[in-house]
Image 1 (cartoon, helix red, strand yellow):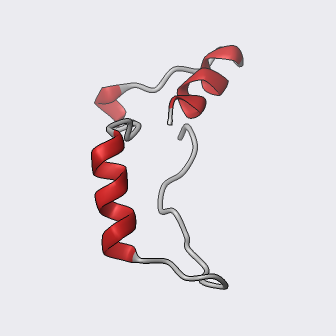
Image 2: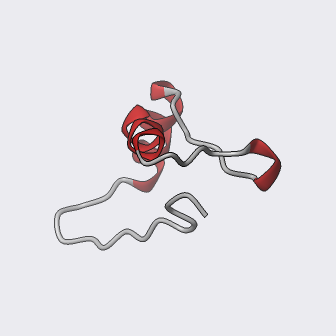
Image 3: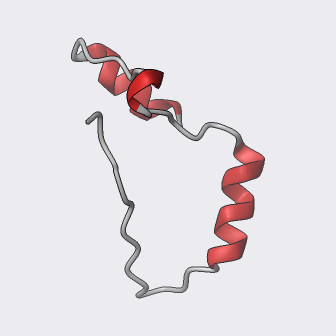
Length: 53
């Protein structure tokens, strides 16, 4: 998940905690979320609040 913050930094942007901009980086939590969602081929998943702002 570090790609998000790496790409942001290369463009001069930084996530700011005071704006609620946090990146999920804990692999065990990501695995738990995927297990709970159990996406199947053809499912459409929308991320709410992606990006830097």
